[in-house]
View 1: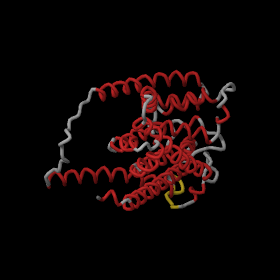
View 2: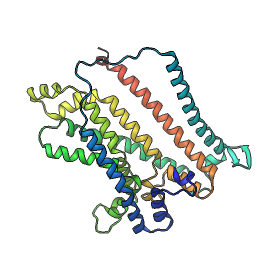
View 3: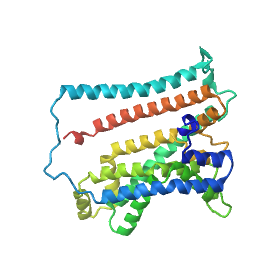
View 4: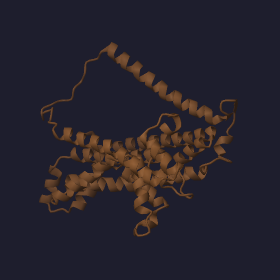
Length: 339
């Protein structure tokens, strides 16, 4: 992120962080947030306008395109992918190496003491377990909230204006930078007159903020899965006078179960790595691993920061492997998918 590798090159998100965390100047941070929000909202508006003017390029009689084998093209694409993969692996290996040496770059003797996080800023293992707890809560609660919301928008009956408003609100987080979202939560919840102010400084506000931050992509994923379902399901359900809840639990959820796993995995991985919004909202008892790594880097404890980053990486890698295994087992257990 620019905070760590940008050097003297400033960006607006970094200026917000400096104003709020470094100088405690919340008013100026809010001003910079508005400036940062303007191009984001403009880009979002342009995207919505262009998307609305798109027309279908494929007819109902279209068949999947199967490209003919091209040995030169295939080898070139494979080499390109290998180069990109090698670049990404190099970054990870350097971070892993930095976490295993005594003092970067002077003493390169290998050690595991940095993973104990003794005498470092950020909270150490407590921060890691806070992030793990946050990620699990966001994955479970966020998946349920997103899928129910997408189902109401796509499969709901009546209340067209309400479903349209819900769809619009679901798209808004994509246009709001994380720094702006976190700062707005400070002004809204850290207010004595706000009846919801009791969640400020708790894990709850971190869960709500993270779900909101990554809501749009998950919502679009759920909408895509629901759109793939034939509308005849709803017609048959209505003709049999079945309630929407029965249709939801017996048909929609089983069909979209792989998508639910995808959404849960997306929420988990992003909750483990997010910094932008939660950096303004955590309390001494709810420090997070990604924020801890940032604080260690600020304090010059590069080895501890690298160790924390690698813990985050290996946790997300394990989560992705579990997701792949569950998806494979789920699809294999649903025989109707093979017909």
